[in-house]
Image (cartoon, rainbow, N blue to C red):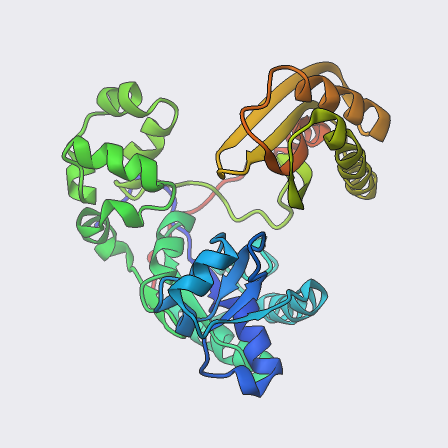
Length: 366
């Protein structure tokens, strides 16, 4: 299969049930048992679940009481983020043995561009295997990997042989792989979009490929071109070692639902203080403030305002957040509030730092 765009050798590494696996590793009594990291109370939320718990339908972001209902033997463990960060750094140190082109997505997953690598190894498949073994030797934890010509396919592939496995999609297999792919497995197609596609008769990549760019644009807006391209193996996003954040935020879930804006002002002040701390630490400012409101029935609402100037100070953040809070009447009692800042000055820096790069198309031995 010939492609008229540059090919890369991309690996997506994803730690298996990371938070829960760390807890099971550090406490052998938890091994082989259904474990959830998070809170099991009525107000609690599952941050991560072990594979033993997932068999009972326990998933991240699930309410703790529902998780316990699904799995009565579920063991809840409080999160230890400092420990997770510590192990994440150990994992990343392995990545940097092979390439400096590492783009972390979170503590437990990252993209690696090994087109040219420090080991001089032409096989991305073998590199992924070595990396996974080194991670296990160093941390006692398993990882899965996807290997292909771009980030999109590598990420999809990393989910195929979980846990503790890997899948390579060679250049000549890319088109067939995408055509046979269930639309729900396309990265960027969420539950709502999948349902919409089903109604349009789009169940697989091949079904998606039959739709014109005009049709996809009219139906899915800005995402239309993305869907049109990725199903054809086109995804030219480079691995970016220093990802520039598009927004910075902070939020709080309350032990008791709040029903009055007056009670929420104090909470907003605390959230604004935390957001200011994060902004100053990263030396970031922004123009667009968004207030996030999650109601007691779990419905979510956001309210935003864009200012004509960059801000990072608590006082200005809080002033705008309060304005947004009183913008309209609350629909219900509130269980969570959050404030985020977008339209950051990093976007300006990003444009200034863009450089033209020329990529040579190679014949790959994956």
